Image (cartoon, rainbow over all chains, first blue to last red; front, side):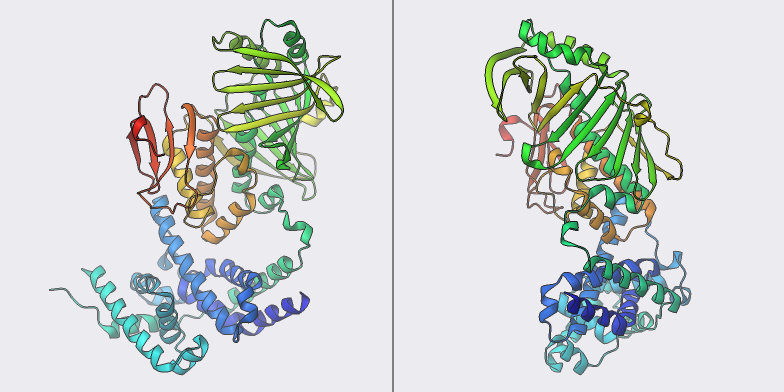
Length: 167
Length: 399
């Protein structure tokens, strides 16, 4: 048990900042990242699949992406249910929020959350983490051409969704 | 013509997102929190797996105290109704209820659900004051002042206390008076009768058993054959079973035990209030929505029986944590959820309510999840998985 604890703590030390940054980019809410990061490492601790993963960091990345989009979905549901305005980035100014049109970024992230898990992971790794197709393929245990094709289809889907919403 | 979203525009937006770098101070703080939390969770002893609802509730935000208070209050407050069991002309029956009627104080254990549920509430009662402890919450005392409609929780280890308002709580001005009034009222019910004379052995001793039936309730009392003192009372309603054991009457208590003042050196917080008055069907529906969305991750719970509520603490806590809401939003949700429970606990419909939400996802408009018949209504109200409500004739009710 101690050995397993050390393994996860080591991952936190080495890759925690990258995972934190990923969560920050996907949620765009600094006040939510702390809780999600905690949840991420608790999930890894509770996961039996994590123990068997060939690449623990890749597994942690995918879990972080899942968590962030789960959070986004809950936020949407809660905003509808409570009939209140959930704070968006423009209400909590950040370095990013001050520079950009926050609504546009929310739209593209919300549209991404509707993609299939694989497509969503690929898009996040390619466009937000700016990984190469080779790196993505290695992380997900697939071939680079396959990743390129998934990404192209996902972008077409995003265009369709965002165009529809624009009308 | 539809204006097409340009691929380059999507890429531009992603690029902006990808440039975001969180504040290094926030990163350091969050990493440290994650490390501490991980160490804490992964070194927890096996014995702590049985989560302590009150400890979980009390350690963080005040809204959770309010939510837990509503559980503790709504599931078990009615015990004072059950001690006020119906009487009959039977001499033996009169002997059994005499100590209850004459009691100035009382001490008893309360179980919600079956005897092996493992969850026991102990009450010491003096007039309208109750000092309550709960079996899975060591070191936490709850003082309830029914007259002032207020509840005080005291957690001794953390030296923390919290007040919860119980606005509109059904009036219990004086405990003994309430019992007397209730007995008189129930005796007048036309369908009331008592079956007595049966002997039953409990732990090697023989007791007389009385079974009193009236309206929708069945009350069973086990009384000592020699002294006629009641030792156990069980109250069955269509949706709940509550039993009382280890009953003692006219116990001498130190009045300080019932003080609503916070002990010296303890921090105090005001945990808001639950309104027990004017709770409606729509409150209950909102409670179901929160239950599915927040507590059960998009699905309705397997059971909404009040006896199962006492086990919900850890799940409630986890759901709230996952929701990523502000304190204010969490507070609103906890209060709303609690209000819905009040509807269930002080159910005013005819007969029994029915729940069939197990395995149903929130939004599934095809599946009925709850139905009941309001007072003086010929039709039933049926709530579906998408939380719409329809009036349905009895012959068309879900099977």
